[in-house]
Length: 499
Image (cartoon, rainbow, N blue to C red):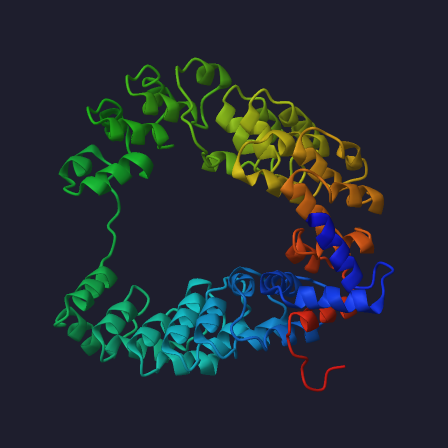
């Protein structure tokens, strides 16, 4: 059946020698397949070589195929698609576009004044969430909208004039007033506005006023102040970061509450010798925290009985502060503490000798995290790409040092990921790409079908019903006349004035 479909597609698009009658019959069969048409259309809109006219034709469809809707929601759209999508007839489609995190500000600006209230709301919310700068006159119109929820979101739009933002502290709607009253606006509004907010009938506004007027007192740093502090959270914060005096430091290290002892270990103001008295603490998390202190020697660190918890940890602040110091990076990369070696991999400019050391580290996750660095060695990237069991394995192929000549040697490897890597070889031949388009693995076949080096005849075959029509339609090597022919067969009308 698949072979018949290949032949049918080849005949329909004039690749094989066939009579005109046979070609007409093949085209009629393709014209009767709406599922195939939807896949073509979804592939064409993602084709980076598709001319503007192709996108304009697609947007004459109503309804749009599901594949196009997904593309509008999640992909970076070319300008032609943005212009067509923000004025599309179906508000649900415009809502999809408004939710697109990659939509440029000019497209979102149009949608903030959409006729549909849900589209407007989603658009203003996204502009606020992603801090997109809209034209000033537009932010003023949004902040003075008749819709309270639009005004509320407009408060945080960048570029909103101060006087407009302050005026919203007196808005008729309590939710807007509550949102407009914060630590920035509180000292700037008139005294009578502050008094009205403190006595507002709506509890949300009163709570906002209380938060805005609150002034954080310094954390306790002496034992007497600590013991007199009634707020448990402030005591915990003091243990972790306040410049505690010697009496308070001793008190914290000997405290029955393990969270306070742990805070003392993290606190750089607690003297090293005092912190090390917790090296045998019965609480594992305290010993672990102590093992990561900046001011202990490697010998002291190795003497601590700690266990590295599962999961990923960010680089300690003191390690990040040394990212620009090559000698410090060399020292930390030789640490016995695996989390410190992992942390070093995040430094943007690693010395070559440190990269070489980390690339052969005994810890799997040191090597894996090094792969996220722009300077990760090619051989390590390929090794982890082939072996890593996490969902992000495919992202390793996008690292700077991954693709290079020589990967084609993996075209016959048992591991499908390595066969996939062969397609990242910039010198892979069209014959190799065609061979991998027949691969038993779906992912490899799909990548080959999208490769512009794929020979034309095979690309046409893959447009057939039982192959990969959507992927093939997205191949940038697909000629523009053939793109138009696909839309013709699918019954998509030509735009007025188009050739």
